[in-house]
Image (cartoon, rainbow, N blue to C red):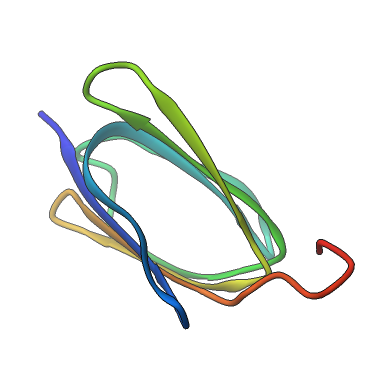
Length: 87
């Protein structure tokens, strides 16, 4: 099983594809998502979203906040840009 992941920001698509695992910094703490995770919607805080793709490569994307939706093995992240201080 795999996750379908789309991470988008104001400048367009930042990452899109299939993955085995995703982590994101929510306002309630870090969350890790594997296939078959229960559906969730969450507000994200500034930090890094990590994506492990099907080949085992890890991508780390810095965000300034945003929203995350997970349902039926589909992860959608609407990311705010980082501010000028890197947060």
